[in-house]
Length: 118
Image (cartoon, rainbow, N blue to C red):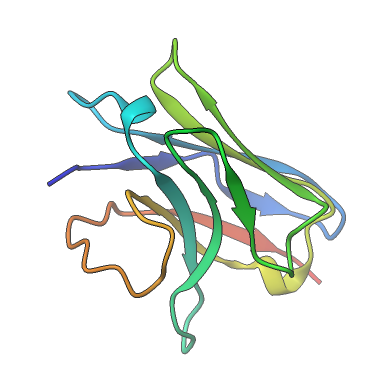
């Protein structure tokens, strides 16, 4: 199984921006479909965005238009740029080799906390 390391989260005010990073030591992420997920306390895991190995991207409606997922092959990373952040974006963000929140992937990283104050 892949082991992912997420970073880039933090505390921001509404309207602010964050750039989340997903990396996996020993793996070339360019060969995998990589998705970003989030989970807030008391809520189900939600698929936020996904990029396939072919470069196709998907976004959940709540972030579409203000978020961008992209690969940096040289850095072996997948990023999620989030702009115009809202309090409802507050969650722990994870990455995984999947697009669906129903994935059976079991090697979730520790995630990175995104907190948008109100």
